[in-house]
Length: 144
Image (cartoon, rainbow, N blue to C red; front, side, top):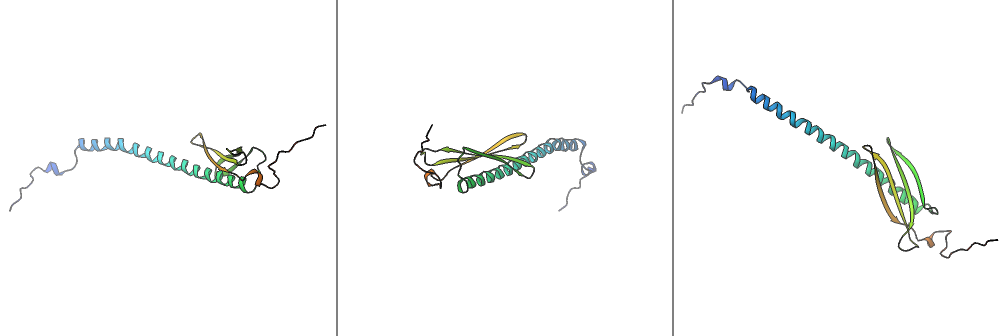
């Protein structure tokens, strides 16, 4: 069995100018799109990390407000620095459906990509009459 020889040596020489220009045009379109996709993915990762840190701070503030303090005032606030980011937190106390159960809400605000973001967690606190130093009966004050 004999194979035919390719007599046209020009076909084996390499790519034509049109093929090279088409490949460069394709790369000029694809590379910026891939770089932008990587940039967006990196920003989304940063936002998710900051949200996770804010949720951890909110959970810790709720735990402290539930276990260690008697929130006599309606709000406590502060700032916590993690890395180079300031997380401003506020814990508020409101009456829930039953007035003897307080609802504690922790809000943590932080900046990400130039915009303020918010993480909010809520829980129910100890019944008011179960806290030491509090009474379920109302007290009256005497005036002179």
